[in-house]
Structures are given as structure tokens and as C-alpha cells.
Length: 369
Image: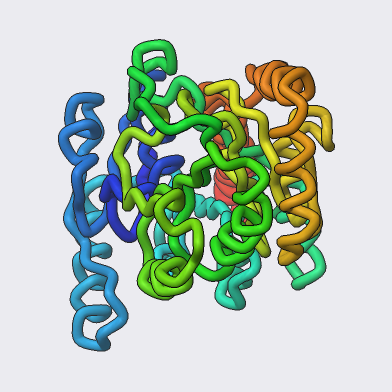
């Protein structure tokens, strides 16, 4: 098949949507398909090239003049590449592809990652809408996306072409016991709740340290919160790290305190690294943690309950060890290869429908209808 992925950029900045799209493009090319990516570029361009994935530069910023240029550029890309499938991973891409689908032969697929955004409803313009969890599928159905369009392909990035095998990373020498998160520095990621929870238990566990790995627009606000904290010397802002696995491998307890989370891809990587996990009981997170079998779930925006869960693990080494072991069980379903195979099945379903429609149309022409 001729497969064209549309994404805003291919930067290596820890964006899960971008990471999944890059994984799919590389693996689909390995499967023998002719694959291209349309984006505003980034650090993953050499990786795409090494997997024989063509990259076209396309700036999709929202300035009116630029949008007109992007539309014209996209039209020429489609004319040259002649895709069978266009897979849009963000809202602007799906709108652009839907507009130019009229008169074109390609089928349009979208993947919904952040269904909590109001603009996610535009992903329903596609012929098939892939939800990254059952929670996302249910949410999109409630927002009016027809069930016949929806397909569930649970997220997964393990054994990704973007990074090494987990055993090939060298753990960092973190202060132990180490509590870590890897997340964008946004309020919705519950960073403030995690800082508050750590502050509640820091006096009791005087050797514990908190590592906040990630960057984002609210980082300065969180840093200001910590400045007057009695335990500020044990709360570490590490910024974006291209190899967060090195932190996870040295982490005792990994926390994802999100207020909303479609799936929680980082949890699969924390599981692979052997962290005990505490995470918010919201949206797709329970699915990612095998419905409480692989991690402890706590209510979102509840620093006291989060602090209690941290205390239980830190005061009981045997319980901590057991949760580390449970995290590493049943990981095969989170492989990037499985995501690719299920995504290709969605493509083939559309291609089959198109071929059947074409055959019927040709028969009608021959019959003089």
C-alpha cells in the first residue's frame, strides 16, 4: 500500500502522538509498504530516512496565509504520492486530508489520543477512527462518532525502532529510594499533586528523593511551588530527557498523577523498567495497568491518598518488590509491532471496501447503468 502519515512535527520532545506515528511509519516500511510522512520536520527525520520513509516538509501552523500554503502544498504531495491510505494523527491534519479527499482515491484514518480536547470531535471526519483505549472509544461514541467508524487499537511503544532495548540502557545513579515521573510539565499531569504528596511523606522517609522528568509551559509554576518547600533539596527538576529509560531503571516508585489520560504510554515503559507504579484512576490508565493488576490506582487530584500509597510502599520493602515484579508481567501486548499489525488491519479493511465498491461500479458501467 501507499501510506501517508500526517503529523504536526517529528521532533524528539517526548510527544507520545509523534512517537507512535514515527513507530508506525518505520514498521510499515519494514513490512514492505511505500510509506511517507508529512510534517514540519524534526529530529526523527534521519530515523525515517534510514527506514526508507520519505518525508515531506509541511508547516501546519494556524496562521491564515500559512494554512493556504499548507493546503496547496498538501494537494501537490497527494498528486505526487498517490496514497491509498492517509493516516492523520492530529486535528489539523485530519481536516486538511478530509478537504482534499473529495476527488481523491485514498481512505482516511485518524487516531484519537487526547479525546478530552474539544477539537477531538474533528477526528470523526475520517473513514475510520482509531481509539487508543476502550475509554477513548467510549468517550468518542458519546460525542457522536458512529460506532461503525470506531476501531480500538490499544497503544504500545515497547521495542520501538526509536530506541534501544531496555537492557541496553545504563541506569542513572539516583538517590534512593527514588520516586519519579516522566511527564509534560502541565497542570493536567498532576505535577502539583505529586509535589504535595511527596512533601507529606518526606519527613518520614528522609532518604527519599523526587525526580520530575519533563518540560512544558507550567514548569516555572511548579518550580516556584518548590522554592519555599522544606524539602526543596530533594525535589529535582530534570527537564526533558531523550532517554527517560535511564531514570526509570533507577526508580523505585513511578507515579503518573494525571487528571486525564487517554492511555498513559509512559506507564508501559515504566512497567518494562520494573518500577512499582502508582497512577490516577482515570480514563485509559486502568487498562494500561491491567485493571489494578500491574499498579496501584488512586483518585486524581488527591494528594493525601497518593501520599498514603507512597507510604505503604516505602515502609514495606516486600510489598514494593512485589509491585515491581507485577509491573513486568504481561507486557507483550504493548509492543509497537502489535500496534502496527492492528493498524494495518484497519487499513486493509478500508482497502477491501474500496476494491469491492470499485468492482460494483465497473460492473454497473459495463451493464450500461
